[in-house]
Image (cartoon, rainbow, N blue to C red):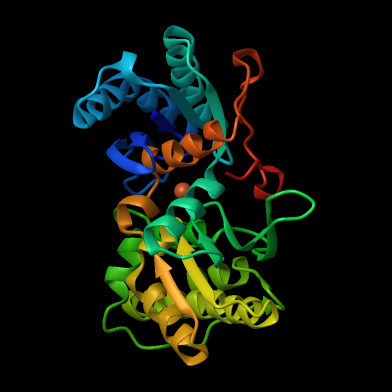
Length: 324
Ligand code: FE2
């Protein structure tokens, strides 16, 4: 079955096409965050403009017509309400016109599932790190198939923390990958480090590093905030792996594009002989293909929604989500 997936939870409007688990297209357009970050209403406005051309680009790339589609998936949440609404409306319009099943997809489930597929892992612990989320996840089969959160941030996601720091010190574009570039060759300055078991917290680190902006070099601060945040994630993940006696780890989500984070996790896994894998950056950045991939498997299992029941949920927890 050809399934179209639509992603619009944050800065990206993405449309992907999947058939029997193979990605045929993965098109996207992104809001440029500049130095100010995301303004949800403006992002949603841009998504509304981009929806039709991005979906058309995905169909063209896959070499199919809209009428060939057998199912539609969209991101139900978590994400920014106005942005999620645009993707849902596009998906409902298509599903209604084509008379095909529609399935709401949890964004985090989609990230983890495509990472598992791309990395060839069976049942890994997943470190899901993005702007709004930072969680350590495990798939449970009982009482029904669902993800459970072993550990997570007490406050903000690691991506939002790096973005907020980048905005505060005037980096352009103000997000984590610019912090990573600036961090090259930096020297370590001691930073607050907060790990409680398998949970962690980032606001103390953000406040402290931002407060030093006038007195310390930008390079040293970028290096130190990144090293500290990633070390916290590594420690909590290592504890989760050892406590659950797991033999596989995957990292996924926007921050999984960081080479430094993957290097640190790979080193930790090597020490414990744990298989470590991840998807390419195309699937760690927000994208429609991961939504299509999860949606196809859900539809195959008979999971879909009535058009009138389709909605969005800004704080859609992964534990509540149906897993393919
Ligand atoms: Fe994401």
